[in-house]
Structure formats: C-alpha cells, structure tokens
Length: 219
Image (cartoon, rainbow, N blue to C red; front, side):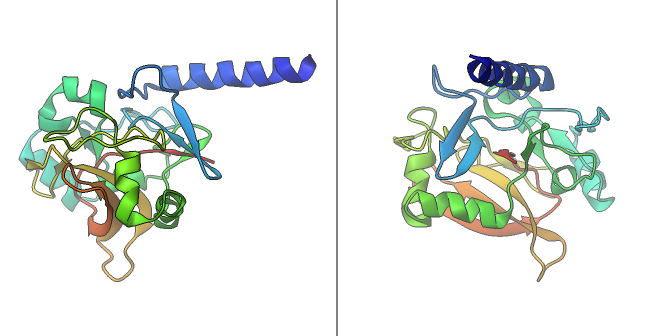
C-alpha cells in the first residue's frame, strides 16, 4: 500500500507541476502529457512557457526588428506564431536557441531539451528517419491529408517557424530544436522537422536566431 501511495503521489505532483508551469499545447483527445518510446519518456505537447525554471521572465518578441535585435545580441526570446496567442494554446511557443541554451533552464524540473543524439534515438526507435515522421504526426491537424498514424503517441502537430529576420513561415511544417550546437558552424544548432506531405523526419542545422518549437524529454 505504501508503494502504491507513493506512486500516486508522484503522478499527482508531476501533473500539478506541469499545470503550474504552464506547458499547454493540444494533443489528441484523452492523450497523456507523456509517452514512453523505447526507453525515453517524451512530453506529448510543445513547450508553452514564458519563464525560465528559476522564475525569470523570457522576453516575448513581436516585431521583426526586435526579433532580429535579440538574435544579434544572442539574447533569449519567444513568440507565438504570427504573434497570435491562439496558436500558443494549440502549438506552443516558438523560441530562439538562446532561450533553449540559457543556463536558467527552459525545460520544467525533471525534463531537459533533447540533444541531437537523443532525437536520433527516438527516430531509430520508430524505424528510422524515413518512416518515423508518419508515426510521430498527429492523426488530425495537418493539411492536404498529411496526417500521420501517431502510433508512437508523440502527437506531433505543425507549428511553423520564424527566421532570423523575424519573418514567420511554413505553418504546415513543424520544427523542434535540439540542445546541440553544430560545431562546424558555431552560429548554428541542430533541429528536427516534419513536413505535411512526407512521412520522414529531417535532421538539419540552422541559425540559432531562428524560432522553433521545443519538445521536452524526461531526465
């Protein structure tokens, strides 16, 4: 009985922590906030927080000039796609990589931003990059019959991106940062993305000033 009570307490505390931290993007109806894939435990929602783990605010940046300035100064920033809070409710926020890499901690307690290698473990567990995308995509929410099977439970949705100059683009794609720099190009970092019209997962690096979604992995 003591063991059961302890497990229930941990589950309740975790749920309360996630709720108070403000991580809320939509998943399929009835879905959990976590899913186990192989030996990894992933959130099923994109990050939607406006404070670092220590409570410091992360600046919201709306205009192109402000976004460009934050990137040039290597300062953390976030935004909603098209600066529309309704997009945050469903898709989470977009963060530049300086927010991802900030020592104050972007991920909630007990989680971290996945490294490039950890993203590769995920796609390997799902059969490799060529087929993993279909298994990661939600069964609804993608245009032109681009929905996936979501057999992984990852519940990936398109959320778009923001380039280094502050322009929003490709709302029918999704992009997720990794915590790993591209050491050949020090201003770049690795990310993964899904397309509406393909079942693969792409691995690229891009400028740290870009705004991408963030998906957290349990420590």
